[in-house]
Amino acid sequence: MITPGFLAAEDAPGHTLKQKELKQLRKEIKTLQKNLTQQQSKKSQLQEDIKLSEQAIADNARQLFIIQQQAQQLSEDLSILNDALSQQTKNLVMQQQLLSSQLQTSYAIGRQEFLKLLLNQQNPSTVSRIMTYYDYFHAARQKQIEQVNDLLQSLDQDRQQINITSSELREKQYQLKQKQQQLDKQQQQRNELVAALDHDIASKDKQLSNLLLNEKNLTTLIKELKKTMEEMAASLTQLPTKTKFKKQRGKLYWPATGKVKNLFGRWRSIGQVKWQGIIIKSRAGTPVYSISHGRIAYSDWLRGYGLITIIDHGEGYMSLYGHNQTLLKEVGDWVENNEIIATVGSSGGLKKSGLYFEVRYNGEASNPARWCKKKRR
Image: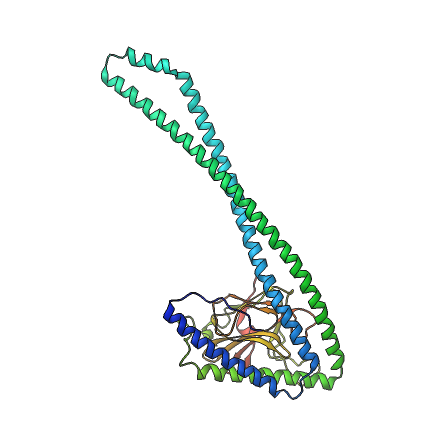
């Protein structure tokens, strides 16, 4: 399922040009996906049902992710407001104490004492200084009163904003609860479909046939993506001038937190098919990050890999992120290094959540462990 990306605002002419090239690219990728589906020798109804179920889950999971981000921001805003309120309250107490001290001093001196000082002075310059002193004293007291009033107004505004933000946060938390319940129900229905599919392909022959078909689909997709991106290179905005992907070998972070299961090059359980990537075991909903800057070349559901995102890093390098719960970027979007592009899931028929991750060069799989060394916290 292709989900809306988050594109930066641009000037009108450039924005129009970009929309045209994105439309062209997305049309090419959509045609590619359609052709790939039609080329499958056998289309399982169970596979199609799982696809539709996981796409529905992805839509809800994406909304859940956005609501979670909004709730987190509201929580941070509320914390800042409470800190500000606390500081303002301290300031108010301090200003009130200063004003009280000034009022007490003014009362102690008294108006009559002030007049006596003036009448007892013979020197005009001394009188002038006393008048100036009392003017300053009166102005300082007036300023103190104004500051106290301003603080009182500010405190009132802060309290109102805290009430509004708290109400919004409670609403988001309610939405989260409702959305999570809906997601859990959809996940249960999806699990039943996966169990039925496992039963349908219980024999080793069927499992092998299924794996071979899945790998063929992915290989075909990558080959066609590379061809499409190269053919459209002249009309597409090129990759920004940054550190080339090949120079980042061994310096990159793994795309998600969790236990890295390096299966690359090993035989799969039924033999005859080797792993082309690795699995990062992680809980559903965990953010998936791009390992380097690039452009989204594919963002959709693919048999055997579920919801998958493929990033073109230029010069023949691509990275693949499969079995996601939801996809947060769209074909043509630019992504930066360590930008969230998806969330971990179990789409594509997995029983447990985890991220499937590959690195490819000119279509050939490269051991991800040679590229990624740094663990995320």
